Each structure stands twice: as C-alpha cells, then as structure tokens.
Length: 336
Image 1 (cartoon, one colour):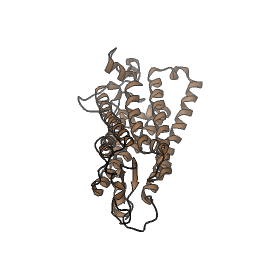
Image 2 (tube, one colour):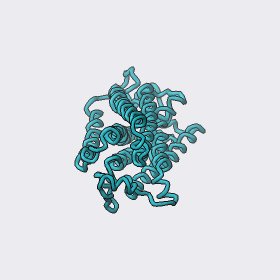
Image 3 (cartoon, one colour):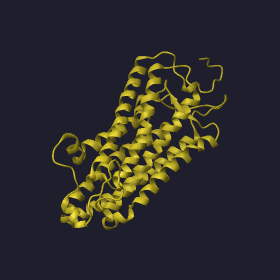
Image 4 (tube, one colour):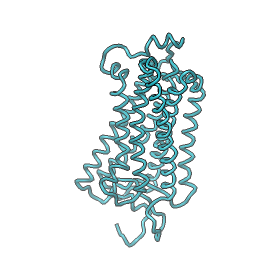
C-alpha cells in the first residue's frame, strides 16, 4: 500500500500475507469467539429450562447474554478470519458497520451489568419488595430502554464526522479510521468519550452498588444467622459474588480500552487487556453460569432436580411459574 497517497480505510486493510502471529491470533479469536457464542446460547437454554432462573434476574441475564452473542459473532466470523487472511481489499464501510453492530451489543451487555447489580441490591436490601419492584412490565421496559439507548448511541457516529472506528487486522484491535489526509490525531474523540462515560457510569456505578450490597451482606452475617444461613439467601450471595468478579474483570478491560484509545501500535499487554480481553470475559461469563451454579451443574451433568427450595416457597406463599420455551420475569421468590 502506498504510504504517500491517502487511501480511506487503509487502517482496516491486511498486510497481504499472514504471519505466524497473525495465524495464532486469528485462530484463537475464531475459536474463543465461537466458544463464547455457543456458550451464550447455552446460558439462554439453561435460563429457559431451569425454574430457578424464571425471574427478573434470569430475564436480565438473558438480555445480557444476547448482548454477548452479538459481539461474539463479530469475533468469530469477521475479526478472526480477516486476521488469518490479511486481505488488502476489505471494504472500509463493511468494517465500520461491523464495528457499529458489535458496539451496539457490547453496550447492551455493559449496561445490563449495571442493571443486574441493581437487581442484586434490591434482593439483599429490600427482599420483601423485590417482587413488586421487579415486575414483568418493569423488566420489559428496562430491556427495551437499554436496546433503544444502544441504537441511539451508535447513531452519534453518523452525526459527528470523522470519528469512525473499525477492526484493523494488522493491529489486532479496533483502530481509528482517518477520513481525510492531514489529520494528526490517531484516535476517535467520540469513541474516547463514550468509552470513558461507560467506564465512569456503568463500571464505577456498578462497583458502588456492589459495595453497598456487600456491606449489607456483611451486616446480615453479623446480625442474623438465621437469614444468612437460609439456602436461598446463600444463593443470592453466590450470584452476587459471581457478578462482582465479572464486573471487576469488565472494569479492567474497559479501563484498558479507554487508555489504549484505539491506537494502532499497541503492545501485547494492550492488545490482551483491551480488544482480546472482551473475548475472554465473555468466555468467563459462560463458564461461570454453567459451573458456578449448582442448579446448572445438576441439570447438565445429572443429580437431583434443580428447583427452588420448597421451604422457601412455602414461606413466601408463591408457587413456581414457568411457560414452556419462555422466561417469566415475575419470579418464584422475592430473593431471586
């Protein structure tokens, strides 16, 4: 490619031939992206089959999984293959559209982390009001609102000129696409602002909510052994702890993305912690859902039937509700 002539989208082109590193990164991206993709579908399957997740928490986790699926598929069918092939005739418009598609679903996934943290906050702090707060209408409204927000955010790239970003197979990361010669900056101002807002509001906001939930759990541990040793409260704590680990990982990755800021010449640490880090996070989310929830393990690998404890149902006076092939958001207990 002629470096003396400006070519729109040159940052998104391959080198013309794959190196050994290109092949390693490309195949790893395809494999891990595919595993995360099918793993997210497994999450949806488990949520649909297990009564323990036929509630607001399960509904929000399902929406989050949809966000992961949208991003995973771009890793598996675009980023990985173009890294392997290193084509020099990649349409810059296709690369940018794929970035928009991926960012939209990543936004949904990121915001749902915040919503799930709120859900756990209410389950621990206001258990008697949980079912009334997280009713079916609210859950559907939240899902629609988050999706509309994601679409509105991505339209900002169409409003503000020269802010586009796309995947650069030579750099193994999302890079800024210069729209005309003479532009000295090598980053998208809009992408930097959006990523920073995401980190401050979604990641840090989630951390603050999780901290207050953790303090409440500590207070219950010290003041009420009966409630703390309740089977369903322990499940709430387990799901909360699982969410905390995922949120910490997400904070690290989003912070790295903000710092790296779509630069082209990232070191191996920058690549692993920013772009590639997203794939590993989604893989962890899938594995954690399957292997850190005894209900899921019993369903997949045998054992006694995974249900909500009958004693707890009797205490609340509600029966487990499920619709074949659908996820009910009304919940079987106010804790879940």
